[in-house]
Image (cartoon, rainbow, N blue to C red):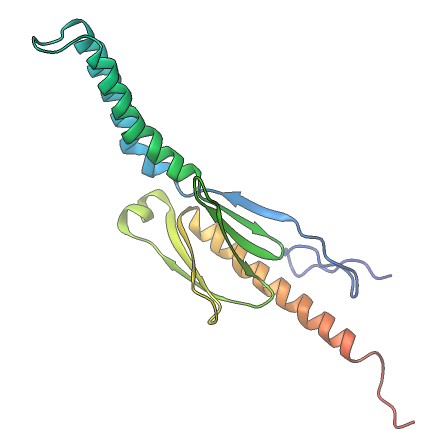
Length: 186
């Protein structure tokens, strides 16, 4: 039995013919900077609620202040948080998985072994925060978008490494499976 092979700092590869188990390389969500305005709204609603609770203008009831505050928190704080929290990205040693949805879950996968192109787009604000949008396209399926990825350069490098390692493993296994030994005219 041969020892696992490494390619200059890349993940260890299993010996030829041995099954490679799927390991989680990274699991993350979009950058949380999108929740900045929600946090400001929460602070403002709490401050306004405390101020207006004892100083209700004439024509309004005291119970209206907590009701309006609760509605504002649900619509402007809780809903954006749930939308952000409902989308997650997972990179394993075999594939990229994007899961989204609050009620019904949507799941898309893209295999590293098939290979794909990696495009990174970074706007001005994304560059300031070290984030970006990664688009993965294999030329057959619809492109897979990872939106507002934190540490986008690191994730790009991990994806490129995983594609390379998986294609090496797939090529090696195809070569060892199709040519069992030296050819003879026998």
